[in-house]
Image: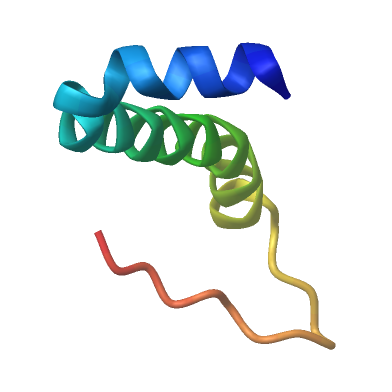
Length: 57
């Protein structure tokens, strides 16, 4: 806990930049994980029992 307090005290002037960096890093990670699933859904042959996924690109 002591280390976290020191870390946060050091980054206090840069709080907005730190949170923006963490947000966009998380967004990039989610994008990297979802992209293969989306490509798989788009390229998979449609079956008679399911609807096609609407493509909004």
